[in-house]
Length: 213
Image (tube, rainbow, N blue to C red; front, side):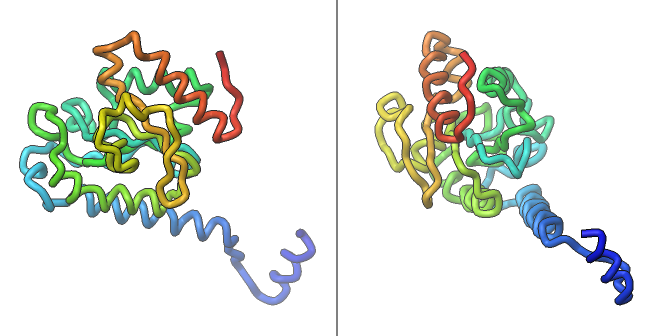
């Protein structure tokens, strides 16, 4: 390698750009551009009441993407997904998987907070989901975990309650998708946390990662 560097220096080259670094920069630039669009989006009425749109958090190079439903009050204030009580539970779940929050990529299917933390409406999902699809296209995760019935229903096209199909693998454009309960549901129904852990063990297997009991 040193010989090649000296050779290029002899030829008069002052800089050598590595292809991998250039591709990574382009990758981050695409996400930054998309985030700016999302932050200024006015496609649906949710933008009227928001403090700020919530784009994502975590590592965009991660093979694992978590997709929730919509920001809540804390998320709307801080501009980050899953930072309230449900987010704290999600973080604990990620740690139990042997990972850190910054090791995964976290986002929502709807980027602005619905009034009074209500469920996102179908028309709001229709308007906002192209941003999520663009995130997936840029990041190309190896596994997606959908949290809750709205994000899970979008990717699985299942019209029954999530309890009927959580824990089963689905595929979206070749990407394995694991639907599971939303952390806010687990706050109300802590007895079902073991079901989500079973789902996460399947995710770890799919990623060829060690399961910590």
